[in-house]
Length: 247
Length: 306
Image (tube, rainbow over all chains, first blue to last red; front, side, top):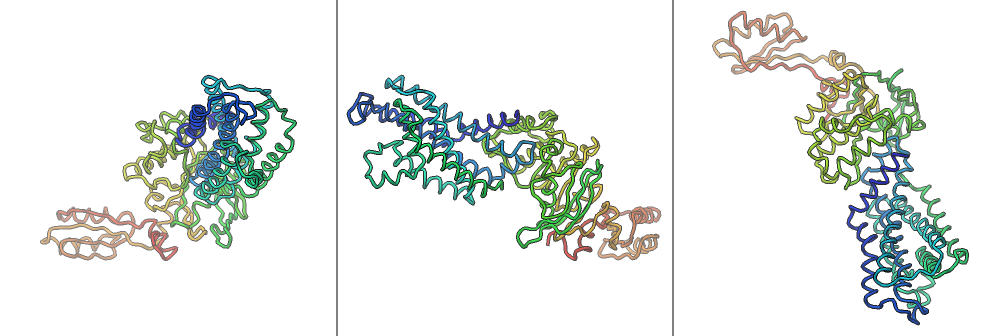
């Protein structure tokens, strides 16, 4: 356990020292907040069903944080560690090999929670962000989203034969996902055929439950979204189990 | 108990046989070397012993344990330097040493190890910014952190400059004096000859010979040669003198150089004594003895580099 704790601390340092993961997980959501906050402000608007633009955007940005750290960064990190022989090196220690993956998950959990607190703190301070829900239900939506997207990142790392292939696959899913899921652009502005397609993306359901619970929805009311996320996670983990290699 | 027991180890990748039914023991406290050309099966063998690969058939026991099924218990007692491995690019040398200290139950203090391996000045350098030699020295340091009973070195001195290489040889001999078992692989015959108590020569997945370096060398029929130069006016007398010493077979001269062919460790002394008694001055004395290279050549018909 001591080993796992130390490795998790090391992995957090690696996350922060890596420019891409640091910027896109911790800084970029704030950049979005301040750009769109300065344009639209947070005044109640009929376009957002009587809510402010910032109130509606922030849960979407939270899903973006999760997608970035859990899917993109974790997938690329594990594929890179395998290629470079980092996984191999730790397998030749008393550390349980699963600890390597557990340390990644722990890192992503702590980084996404920190980034969410930073984002909501800034939104509260500068735009009077309002939270209408129950914090436990929102935390539940957060946990399900994180699980599903981490499983997605992990399955790509398992399938991909090289870090280059992994990055390509991750990007191919990630970029459409952040624009079509409602995480950054409201889904309502998209054509209905695109909206239908977006139902295939885990992030779409993540945005729905994060925003739903943000505005007071009961987590139990999102059974179908949660089911889709859990099934996607289950399939991803089953495929990973069959295809994952340590080297 | 043997440090390592290998019985009928076989490892096949697809249709390629990497290791073909090899058996050997490593005694506790010895320096055991596995030598052979690249691709001979050294790394596959050592990685089966380390538990990183599972053999196709055969059994491996390390400190009496199965390296795959008793991985955790075994890894607490051995130190491993892998030929191909890496650490996180942005991990500092100091952080790596501290992390590894936390992974083992009874770690050796890392500061003296870092000092011994010349890493003290690069403790704050990221792994990704280290030179090849520094990485190799860090890998060796990490293998010593567990305070292990057995240390595995796969290609111990690859990537090191001659000075660092000699420092590693001293290090291995110190580990030996501390009573640790050392298992190393190398493609450098002089390294094996100089360091190892026993050497297994491996070629195309088979052990072709296993013995002490001295015994292996004594099996080859290669002459000892003594080369020296004498003043030209003394050449004829010198050749006549050295030709008659007990272990000389023949002697030739070219210019002012004499080459004495013979056998046995006594030949150089006999040659020197013969010239000394005759009052002949000589210079640039050189002795060429058979080496493990000759053993390899005899057993495989090839030089190790070809």
